[in-house]
Image (cartoon, rainbow, N blue to C red; front, side, top):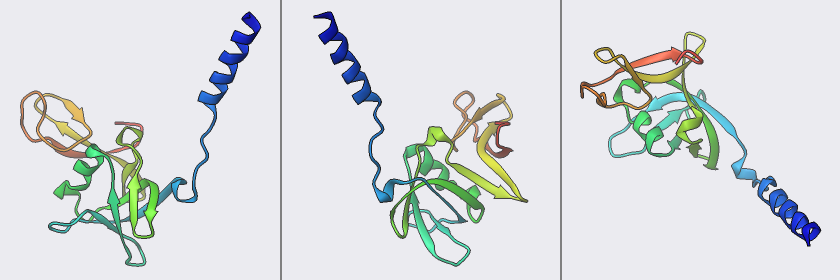
Length: 142
């Protein structure tokens, strides 16, 4: 009985840990381009060959993509294509968005100089409610 129980547990564990097959459109990709924010439209990246790729993501990613202070910056976004002109960013907690500036890859962060609190989404400081400042930082230093 113990042997059967052990075999069932091992089979269950292997099933849980098995890598799920990934379709051709779910492979990880990276896109680069200038962030374009247009009224009543989703944010997009304009690539070097002037193609527009609509970028979407979870709620936190969307907040960053709609931050007007990032209009026109060169972005690097990791995720996957859902259509040739639509890209979904990886979840926000994976830090899939970076600004490319002066040959550096910068993390998008926001800083409250009153409370010395760093956040990763635009908006008011959760402590003093003053608007946080965009603070692009070298990756690993945020």
